[in-house]
Image (cartoon, rainbow, N blue to C red; front, side):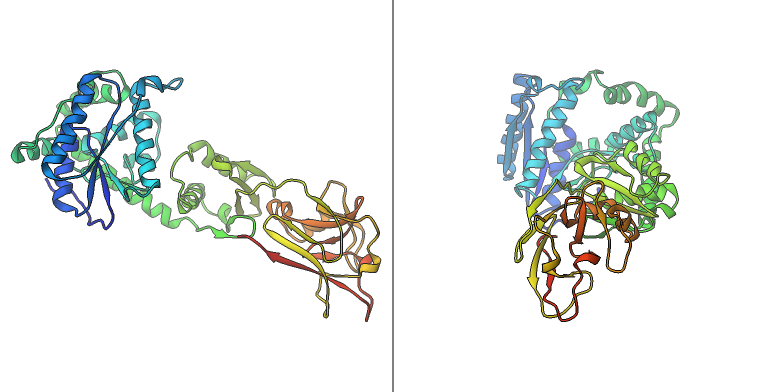
Length: 422
């Protein structure tokens, strides 16, 4: 058995249940890594048998001198609607792992999945209609490693026997109460009769899919940070599959690896057919918007703002600070005559029906002016205006109105705009 285990600088938490696979993984990891700790979770499913397994793990860790972190979860009392016992146990198990990673107790969690586990995962995904990425099987997930993923179970059995590694047997693995166990105990044995080397074939399929997936991901355009979020330039000029990969690439770049599903990717494809400034919701509070061929992404949500206008007043909104200060030099688009500003003006977010007449321009709807400036909906959300009623006298930091323009040698104010947060 030759698992591929790269040297790891941080602390690795090795998930150990006491079964053959995890005990094999523990032996391999303690012989190849300098800094490991065992993570054992008792799921509260099998009564005394489950408690006994955890005691076995802790005793063995003391024997070999490896630290052991032990946790108990109450699986049977935390079932959610439509969730099996096995899925609940998995969810609670990963909650423990994720917490240890978040708290930096460990820098990675090593799991004992092997080639048969991966073949079962691939087969399940094929039955559900997977794409290229799904054919990889148990792909990489931030913070998790699977050193035995390419190792057939027969090699694990041989390794355990040759090295005299003790283990316990989980009786729940012998039941057919879930899809995976049905595939494991009913479907796979029949396939192996006709195709004895089918596990090796699944390993090759996974490797080929990973190669294809990596190539497609490399073809996808990168995102670029902007004042309102992010932008993927010319996204909709790429083939549809690359558009999907561009979205995936963005979310992975900000550390989100799950919960972005086929329906979300399909919604991006549909967005490409819509008019400019059409917005679609995404998980984690993100929104995506089409602007010509660009895909804009934002997690920011802004609310109505209004404050009385005052010279030297400061107005903070959407990551920017604005201030009206007396100036000593004209600044195009940001200079106005304070004596021409009507009484009762306010600084606020824009409203439907607002009108604006830029210097040397015609009176028109503010929305038309902003469209002419080629601002997208996310950029428009961040705008503050100086207005009385529906008449806008300044779009702060962008343009001032004809009626408040500065006369030559007159006293004037400069609207100073500063970024106060990224």
